[in-house]
Image 1 (tube, one colour):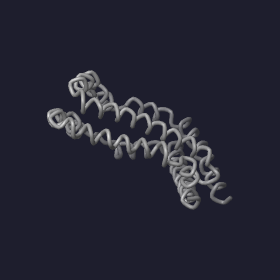
Image 2 (cartoon, one colour; image 1 turned 135 degrees about the vertical axis):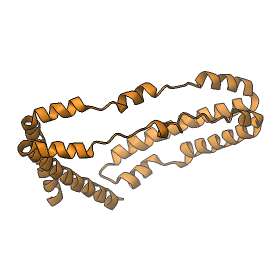
Image 3 (cartoon, rainbow, N blue to C red; image 1 turned 30 degrees about the vertical axis):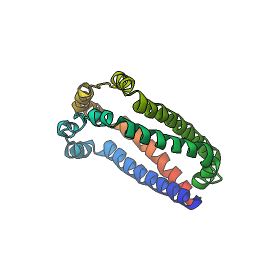
Image 4 (cartoon, rainbow, N blue to C red; image 1 turned 90 degrees about the horizontal axis):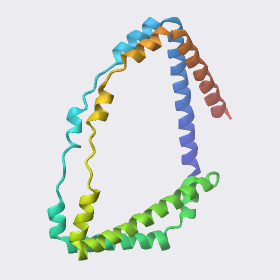
Length: 202
């Protein structure tokens, strides 16, 4: 597992170097040829319509009739699956061992925190599954009332309308001040390049 982490870190360092070089190129273009950057910006600017893609998310899937017509069978399956998973989380899963396998000896503390957190979340979900499975088997009407309270409709139109608005003013602000933004970008890119080269060499 140590080799996989090393490969991952090397890949991040290489990507940092690439982005640093691209940022330096863009910053130098902002300093010496802002008109060329504006031309590239106009070419890369695209308007993507999300309305047709979001139509699939706005459709409701009605499974209530099927669930409550087979409430005993589905409740028993839900209860059994939750009980099996809860047994696994309490008695079989070794979070410390998983942390050593997936995170290695260097990051074992972070791995233990991560896996212990996931274990407690899994236990909580399994307990909720036991409760819901029991209610579905023996008190489907109460389960239906709880479901109606939990069902919520979220309106996404207002958020999508904000995303659909173009930011031409922001582009104009950048191109009105090419020197300070070019210098800031060049300094940040310079440090990214230096840090990534040092990490790659050592």
